[in-house]
Length: 445
Image (cartoon, rainbow, N blue to C red):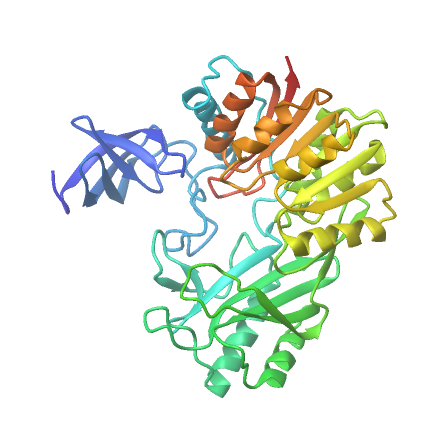
């Protein structure tokens, strides 16, 4: 078996990233854009010690779930991976992904998992998008590479992006503004980053340097592109890095913060702050978390990884007190401002490591009843889980996860610490991608 060999194989499994898995004489082969049950012809493009990667040449026997992609760039762009299957099949894949992780990593063999809560929109659902800019143009990166696929639109992103990208592209060409070249670490424009909400669209131009020539002309192009622009900012990122944003942001036009609402709670969102990208699903996600919390009006709720305060403030009117903790200073300032703006007086916020701050709060006499955990993809720090487990008044944890493997690891740890998972509901926040959010209710045994 070697590179460029051609085989016909049956797809018998799926990876967590949505690639099909087949076998050649027992040897695992990963094949993107395939579905379980299909027979396909492939060419091997990579052969390693433990597995190979095949490129799809032809689908010989298709799955009944195979569909024609609605995105013309699907097979080139690395942004989505599941446009080739029906949405019903995608939801089954995501439920199985959660189930397999809980069994394989967490050791939960017979735990019940609800069906995935489907997204009301499977296209045009993202309120945040980023488009890399290179000497080849503006677009998206190809799968597993930094090779740019030039494109001025993305089917899962807001339709406002197209005129914005076209206006920036026109400005760059008209005035000879150079794109950033990561090989030579030269050029100016690195990324175009957008966020859309109730107040319009916030446009962030990420630059490899402080000076932005022809600034007025850029502003004029963007604000006259035919969509509502609430603000334009410049983010300076001079590091030779894959990190999108630098630490310094300058306001070029309008407001540096975006305004949006979840239900009847309104939030101001700065460029560096985390905010869920699928607003209709966010309301479903938070409503489910609130249902699991089953608040009676007197409880003290710990909101860990609170960001700009969205989850806690969504629950605040049903709780006695919200205590939010976050390591990002700007997010904490946003959370405080948002609470004040929404007239929420029973929420307080602290910046720092959650495990240290919670210890201090408990030592001062606080008796938390419920903890909400909404960590990044890497999951929770064990030190935090230890601190929470030691709080005698804490009887309930709501864990909101964006990565099933780290969820399974943390649920196993919490189960060993005395908190058993009672309800598990995946929520599809990211249609057409392999990512899945999961809400879990844990009660103290």
